[in-house]
Length: 114
Length: 114
Image 1 (spheres, helix red, strand yellow):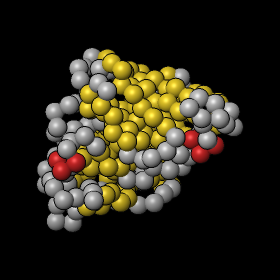
Image 2: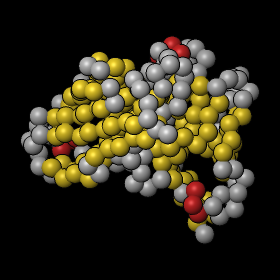
Image 3: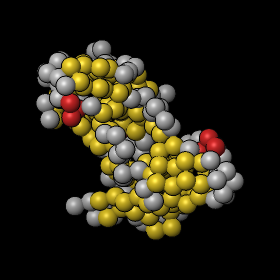
Image 4: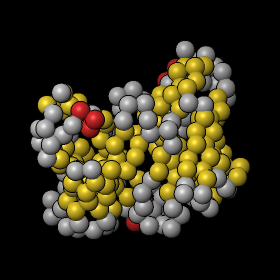
């Protein structure tokens, strides 16, 4: 069966510090991968998605970036965090069939920028 | 572009009450429709889905029917429990989006009182 992991689960970082969040998927090949952010009490904002190694599409211009160095690994980064980067970050994957399929979410990382 | 609109929360109900959370959508193609649930501190998980008009998705006592004529996918449950307290997200995935992206509503928080 497929599983998705995210770490760390919780992170507190000062403004201006770098960020690296990691997501890995097991049990499937060539998944579509996604990063979402959920601000407190708000809905989901799609940040990035990837359909293959090295292929990243950005939905919202900001100080975050994403990379996919391996088929089942998706990394969210920032060189300098802002207060507004605080939130709950969710990684998700879906079957790469082009069909209108379900997304499977990881447990999330709660980021607090102070 | 495609969009999802769901009723604002929070919704507060007593145990065993009837639940309806309204969801309407706009889409240029023939989307699949989903309800996801998010329990406190966790990622989202699929609750139910429907892939074509008049389909009914159901799971754990929840139901939603894909109504193309009214572009709606309302979530219902006949008797809610305290354990149903969570945030519920309506979503669509449309072939015109290439199957790579899912559009989420803003979420509706449900509180169930004992």
